[in-house]
Image 1 (cartoon, rainbow, N blue to C red):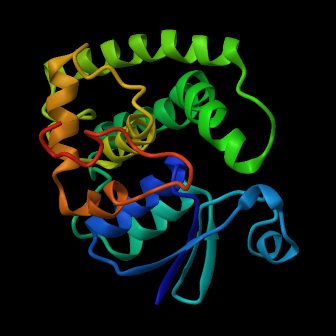
Image 2 (spheres, rainbow, N blue to C red; image 1 turned 60 degrees about the horizontal axis):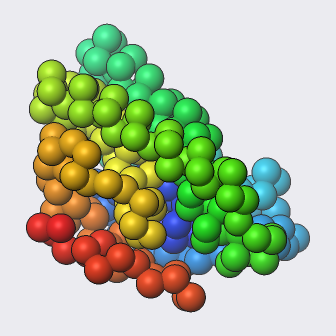
Length: 221
């Protein structure tokens, strides 16, 4: 059995879960309070981060490395384009969401409002939340601009870029931090992603003490 050590509202864990589900790989999910940095957990990943995947007798860490391994070993359905230019664009957008979007939006909203309370690391920083609320508008507009030109974020086909973006937005949608009325194209794109079988376990996530928004698991919003 494949095992994934994860935290439900980690976008990096969600990206890996989506890739596993899309490739129809059954996985045992093991929720772990990674912030406690237990010796057992650190033996699996000295960086003290999730996700961690146990597969084929290997213990893999870092979401990009894990997704790359899955693509190499289970190439169907493909989530990384074979064309070099398309692959570069996909990787650029994965980096955009896992770096820029994460720093400007996810950390300022999901981490401040939920992770801090769950991990007992203090009170939310109001200035950070304000910055996140402002930044997400720019990112939604940028996604809308991309989707005006393409069927999916990186081009004509569904790729890991879509799963990276959806992983972050789904965490934000859990707490109602996405204004889906801002861009119809982004809303329609997310509805397509949300309706995929791979998304079912994501929509079933519940963090104790934090109820998801009413529309979170509604495929029609």
